[in-house]
Length: 611
Picture 1 (cartoon, helix red, strand yellow):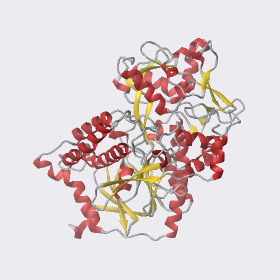
Picture 2 (spheres, helix red, strand yellow):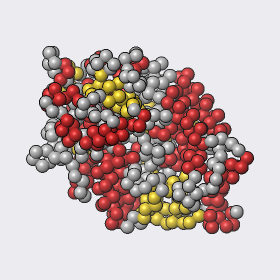
Picture 3 (cartoon, one colour):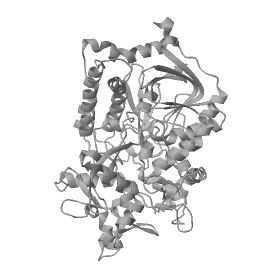
Picture 4 (cartoon, helix red, strand yellow):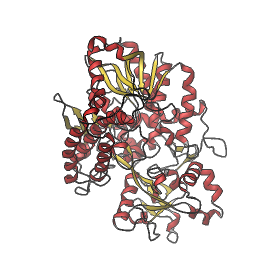
């Protein structure tokens, strides 16, 4: 079939191809287009349906509109401290310095932020941030971001390919030359030739049973980069958001934004006790001895701010919730209670206040679950939310170790270290989406197009069609494999880990690969969700192996990686980053590389902001 391979696919040519149309992808496409590049934008779902729309709390940026003590230096220090100091310090610096300009830019493009009384962008408290720092639009910030970026980008002539999934990156002499994809409706193949490619595909949440992530998050970008020879780092660090709904089933996994806790929501166990006071850091102290419910003061040197313990970092809050559940003090359906209705004791009538501050939360749970959050608590628990690990990139340009391949957003690693602070994800999308698009356009200007071997494309298509071709002979159901994999990942490499269970997961992955090799998708390419799931399995198995192997190799607890057999931090591992790469024989190779050490001027900033 090699001779007529071009008849099996249509070809599209662009200077820059952006894979993913969430916040990072849209911002990259806008910047690449502004840099003079012809841009193709591929999205797995429909434009406007990216998972970014689900982000609720806000965009973290040191605008200092609510507290003038804030600044990029404080934001940098908070990010490094939240990431347990294994962050790529240069990414954290650029992020903190450039986030305010990216937010103001978004405002200039039409984003309608909530306002202070004097008309400035309002900012709210969020876990791990010393001062009110999150610019927000009620609890619909991600939706407003996507709307604004799409409105701004629609006039730039970007070629948008919706409901198209990329399955393989194509190389020419080790550099990026294109990508092979198929459209999800008709199953027709598409070849994208490009001088530079930006990955902005999001996360890996669908490798787990309980997740807040949308169906697209099957680790596509991580796997595309890995298969192309790029390095992945920090894959052991998976963030479990403390407050995802656990009941009723109609809303299971849907996040209850951190903004609920930022606006006064408290966590209680089945006995009604506010249990977060049982495990708080040394730099917290009671605000008043007589009224601990009112919150505690968070102190750092001579700086002090009111901060309820519910706004500690996400990994800490998630583990406290798990402690209550495992001790038998959880809610009836395996969670705990999050209650914001109690603030009526302070405000008299909390209903309108909550509906104004948290409109999406109120209407979503009222309509989907019959729960009135102004009058009753919610049942919540940890849910797989975000992966700090991903493609290893240059901090300034966002280019991976594969020439011409860039990555931004959740698929790229380095900024968040061992744990991401809430709100840093949206500013991450803006700051590094812009940088990825800018440098991808530069790369495309400076390099000619690579060549794509027709035989390689044809062989890849034949492999993709195998589940349909073998269906007549019987085989494994892709949905059953995915279900079993998710269940075991949740149980064996979840929020609390140990060596025996992670080793078992690594061993189990071999059998999952054997099952996946026999997967079938009866029917044809058109409207065949079984075929889509069969193709997703390779990505899910790749990221699951990367997570399990990386976690098993890090014998300590740090941030989003908690081991009950090694519950403390180890100074040795605090200087090392876990890296995985595809070996010459196709096996996954793991190594530890030094964490980049910041220069003296950054150390001074850390010292000044952590006393």
